[in-house]
Image (cartoon, rainbow, N blue to C red; front, side, top):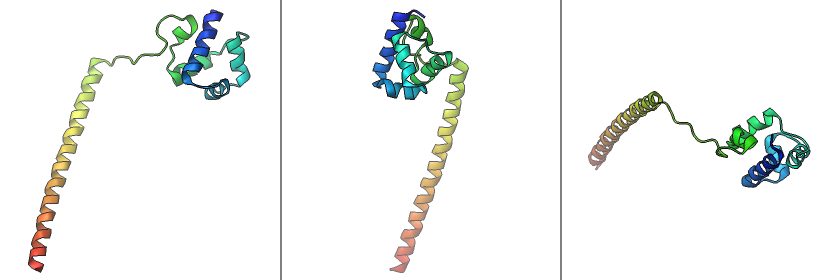
Length: 123
């Protein structure tokens, strides 16, 4: 790992998260002394640290190690078939909910009618 850039990027991530060294180290499950050693260039983070950084903060490992590319992982585009299936499922659920709402609305109207009729008979 190219040290100066790596050190800068690690501090940049921590600063962006708004965390102190102690809080950032806790969030990454490492001792504060390990984070300090990473930031000073005394030692390098483990692969597990890099994977957790990617998972927890959506940081690109490539960017973190080399400085190339985007800092944050961007959402991957979904395959057109996945989008089509999602739309079919969404439309089906929407249709079912609309039918249920219509049924409940009809029942409510019928109950209201029966209540009015019973109130009128009571008078």
